Image 1 (tube, rainbow, N blue to C red):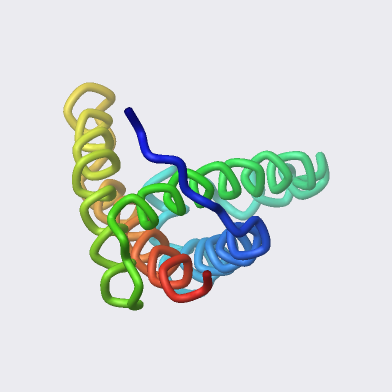
Image 2 (image 1 turned 45 degrees about the horizontal axis):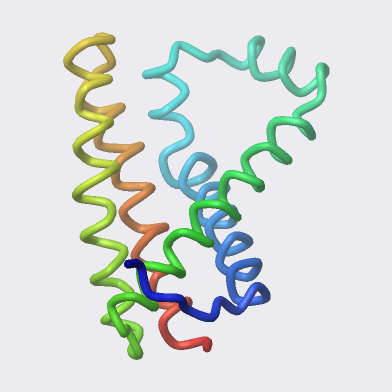
Length: 139
């Protein structure tokens, strides 16, 4: 039987916001140009997407971040993580088991470049480790 744990929803909300900020920086100033080249997105396509409105996409992504951090909070609690490093370790193991392994299939079967895999997988590695740390120290 899965143990019952108490989840702080404010912490999950904060972790989701941090996750979105990491994504904004990751796919913006840090790796935005490289990611756009790999996805074959040029300025014209980006302008078209902005005209259509990206609010819905950001809303769906935020809901996804909330769900991811809600689930991560459970694992952090199940493991009894109390320090930032403990939370980061939980994030790492979940990334290794569920993100790194699943996304490699996209390279193998859908033909995405290895660089794409590295950018996207590393984004989730950083996001899960940072938010795992937050969820561990903020009861």
